[in-house]
Length: 240
Image 1 (cartoon, one colour):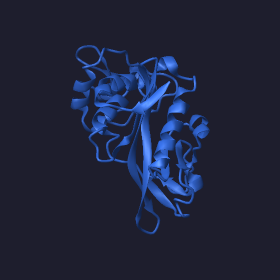
Image 2 (cartoon, helix red, strand yellow):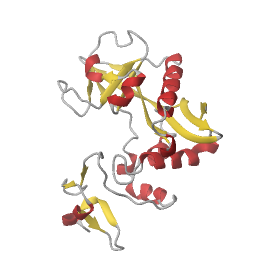
Image 3 (cartoon, rainbow, N blue to C red):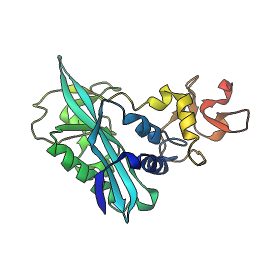
Image 4 (cartoon, one colour):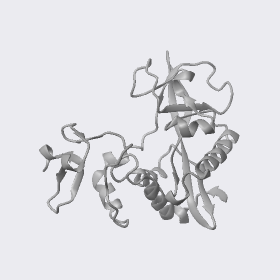
């Protein structure tokens, strides 16, 4: 196993890896590979914390970090950081590779002076890497009321005392919603990859019609395009 910085020559391979890792996990299909594709040009992207993991000369994992911020209660801003997407090829999942990659990256981040990390994820996994509920640090999620204990909003203080007891609200960096903001560009980019079947699966995030907000829970709820393909973004009532 080898962990190293990502190089430009790795970009396409890493984006395909990311697509394989996230396909149908959180939604029918995925957008994480496109986020990564566009994010390398984002000012918040940290090239020094952009790692790939190799096994037998093959790239099987990737993680990237970016800058964020915490709006301090009462005024002011404290620099914060986040990471993701973090990807492990499906053939290598649940074998400890993801935790090894993340722990390596966190140690490198700490050495660079990264003091506090917020992220969205499952504490059953990320707890093994030292993360806990962000609410325990009095850091709130930007989309929830301050009193909410958001089970998927996690944090870790890499440098003890970095927060100095402050209370504040985490604001993620811009760029994670680029697929929603640029649907035509995303569709053109996605078309450059081999076709894969989108599907609803257990454990996915709730999907809603982009036109009316109706919950989409199965293919029968979705619109159908002129070519007969399922439109997983709109309901039948909002079919063009």
